[in-house]
Image 1 (cartoon, rainbow, N blue to C red):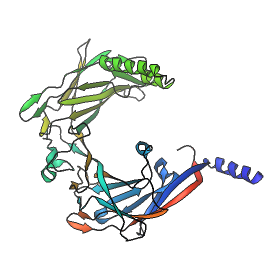
Image 2 (image 1 turned 60 degrees about the horizontal axis):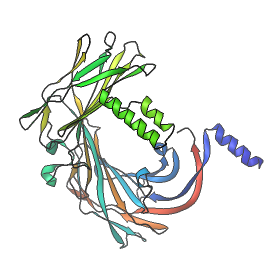
Image 3 (image 1 turned 180 degrees about the vertical axis):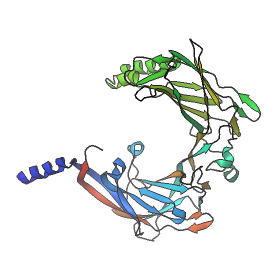
Length: 384
């Protein structure tokens, strides 16, 4: 007993605790540079489930057969693959069939795989034309269709972040004017957003919020109380993650404006995002954003230098040409691939991905081995 107590004391002194892992699949790949990382806390905790290796053109791969939060209720064992495609590199899988076998390099059952997410971003000059079919990771001229989200809307998001000197500018009510959008020769004006200062917040962070968003939060709070969710409900009133949301059939604009007074130069910190549903090329009509004090009519202008353009595609066929896009050499495009391996798998099995063209050259994968591990435990940090 004293040895168990000593062991517990030593682990606690090192910031660790014994942790049950339950059952899991440990992967491996026949590459001396491949590594296996732990499942949780960015590789610092949990069972060794995440395989990492690289293929041609420095493309990074991760693979696991572990269920994430969204897969936790599924009876099927998932195969989760993530690929990081460097800027300028093009890939195209030659099939959507993954082979699952009990013996290495043997025939086995074929399961369908698909790309569930494609994510990328690029930095754009404020008045540049945004032609997603030309600059996006999924080229509509190659695939025959544009990239749409699950609501069948095109997902391109312009993200603009900037600070305004708030030394002598902290309005009780504030109106924000955004530049209009030009698409197909048609000018679409974005309605001004009227915000009020929420002084219930304390400390260095004070939020601005629109009346419509305030009503929405109160409705969510009332619904939360009605459902008996207790202490969680209060956080709906106290935490403002977004201060305004305005939607039309053409666009959705949302974001927050926060007063930060913790440094020598207090600022209004602005976070604004624009989602567009038009497949046509578009651009901003102006590079100016206006903030106006509704009482004194004092105006602060912000000239947008560049903005971040985010692309997201969902649920597209695996044999879809995808390219790494961005504006900096270190930028990459991420894709996530999913295949369901079925409810039952043998204690040891192999998964072989279909061949992939990388900049026109075929690359063939070696089988990924998965070994079932029964209920076990390990030592994990308790503060991650």
